[in-house]
Length: 327
Image (tube, one colour):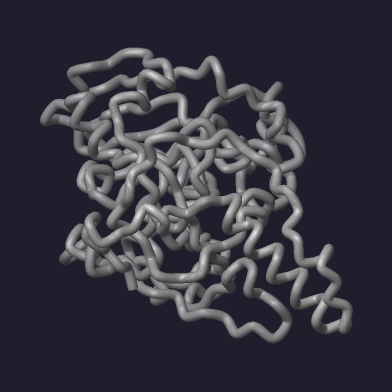
């Protein structure tokens, strides 16, 4: 279940510090191995230094967090769907270093009172950063629990002031085959119509759970996870789907926009892409999922929850809709 605490109930120590978390996990793994071998040498129990990323400052306590074990930083950053860097899960971590995230701009256009081209730092600056611990469920039937850092998309939309004609908001990823080799013709690069595009209905975009992500584990978002900013929509299939990465454009429109995977394979991927264990993918079941980091030979799969466990918060958005038709 989603535990929404009052901000006053959350101690500052509860905001996840990646360094402490990684050291604790490394310590426990080392101790377990040493105990099994009967070799508990003091040197083995000293946590090794971790690679430091750029720490985000001013991250406030958040009321949005699930009370579940976090997925390890290493798994989050090395097991990705980011097809702009290749279709293999490990390719983004290997190849995303070539992505330059500064300078970076976001173009805002369409049915909006404040269109323009915004520098990414100016785009982020007006917003208070907060950590939110969300479940993430991929359409491929695996999941994670991630401590994101970001700010509500609703706050961005209010600041940009869309007109009454704006019923949807669409998003676009950077198109640059020099930096993103997966966009080059041939192999997987020729299989999608680049640049990557996604969209949300306006009420989905304005929902308080919908987040603009700029970091994880208290640090700047790694390139392979969608730097410099991405969407996080926890009740929808994500990581390589509705949670679009490396955003360069927002467009406010009257009609439902096309989305990359829906255009490529409409029988398999719908516009809404809500997590729904009652609607299987044509090629596999969506009733269960494997949690990354727990998927050993003997680990049982988890039951997938309706709307990824956020039904109490978002089911009302889809009241009266046939969710098998609008998948």
